[in-house]
Amino acid sequence: MTFLRIALTPVFATFLLSPNLAMQQWSVVIFSLAAITDWYDGWLARRWGYVTRWGVFLDPLADKVLTSAAFIVFAYLYLVSWWMVWAIVIRDAVITLLRSYAEYKGKPVDTSKLAKTKTFTQYVVIYYILLVFIAHQTPALDENFGELINSLLDQTLIYVLMIIITTITLWTGIVYIIDNWKIIRELYDFSTQPTKSE
Figure 1 (cartoon, one colour):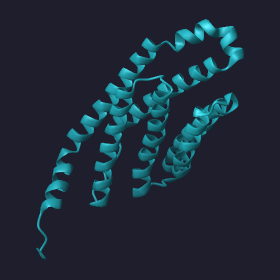
Figure 2 (figure 1 turned 180 degrees about the horizontal axis):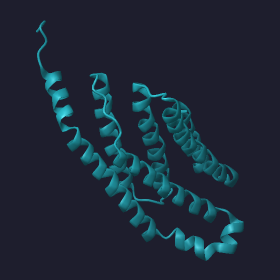
Figure 3 (figure 1 turned 135 degrees about the horizontal axis):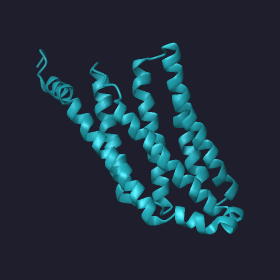
Figure 4 (figure 1 turned 60 degrees about the horizontal axis):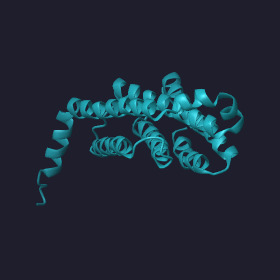
């Protein structure tokens, strides 16, 4: 399920960036399928106890890959500001590197409830922007509900939503570092200790 979510990410981005309206519309289905694998993967893990160290690490990584790709495509389409996208992507990259190093050193760090809330909020905003954008691109909907769609696609509204998302994302990154500072410091100290052969 996790690898499927990662594999669907470039497919989603390609379809959304396509000039073909049908492919753009299918991007909603592809993103939904990828998001469902996240829910189903978590349900399986809780229901049957299929929890592994790799799963604990890869599941949030797959979320970051999918959400980051969506925000990057939105920025490319001039729907959101690049600086907020880079803030989100860089934060996720830094946290992922820290988690990877902790996993490598045998001190894995679990995803907090706050981080899961952040991911859920990102999904909600991505769905909102994606659905409104596709509705705007669809002539039949834009012709009949153009005024409503334009108000929902208002740049000020989207900017406010993205500010909220960016703030939450950066805050969870800071909280992550604070909560795991002892582990991070131990990892750093351990990595800088000379070995016996030295």
